[in-house]
Image 1 (tube, helix red, strand yellow):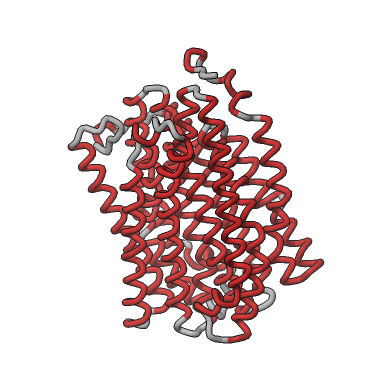
Image 2 (cartoon, rainbow, N blue to C red):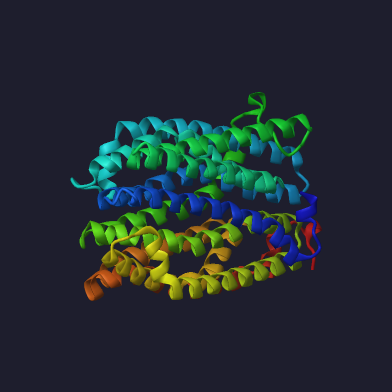
Length: 455
């Protein structure tokens, strides 16, 4: 932990903590694309559409884990910066068991209401059966999905960066192998894709549990998973949940936005949904790598804030934002120039390839903006300023996006629907810059303990 959090070279510290997080997101993206690729081999648009429709449900399950994982990560990083190691260990313990209990509740509730959930996601008579098959197996793995996704954030906050990345990579590698076995060899379609996903998360969870057991044996004072140390500390739980909810709502509202989007795209048929699904998954490369960079940097920001180090907090924030903008610009160039080739990897029908390539060109222009939006969001989460991050989330996925989809669909039909995210994020980038300037590190010094201030 000290090697990263106490690294004097800020750009190097960001790379040390950000690159592993980005690699973890990259393996997740690869498994998502593998799901789509292997299901696309069935050449049944309804099956491709079903996988697309279920993405928001999987993201919502993951986001519930983030209430405790991201919330605890923010609290733990600031506590370490303040030198409160015992409190950080108790926070780690609480968040782990909270994820386990939540996963069991989601499993039970989801299976009881599986068809209504599929309908809300946009499933119809053509793809309802495939959608329910996928959902059923994802819900069966809900406890593992939650633990695997929540512990990633907790691990990073206590300096277990390598272990966090290996767990993600392991789970996704298992998923990809099982995709080939269950979808291609055993012809199980969407059901096989969901089974592979759940089993992959189970493997990742088992790895994380083994890592925690080893850390406890090594007397790591920041880590605790013993049931004997679990207790309902409501003050700590409040701190975790207050930060975790805005972080989780980012993905929840993103899923709601995607559900609205899928329903509007569905007006134009299953082919349009299938094309958008593939274009969106390719566009997820710049999105999720930007998220990985911002989430990976967040514990570093929280540590500097807890320590009262305004200078390094400012430098880390600016450097990470520049890295994010540069990353987005690279992907803008790659996707815009290679859209037709990228679409052809997943599709054989020329009409669908052309349509998917066009969607990709419309989507990719927002890539450089992500470096600003995601970093400002993570900045507020890391500092414990829940309201600020919640405002950005609401603007991005509800207040601006949903009316935007309606207006853009009315004015420009399908192309307008696809372009909505770009229009929203142009406005949001300006808002984020203004919010950051108002709450810059120097201006927040009055809320830090006076003895910790560093000019």
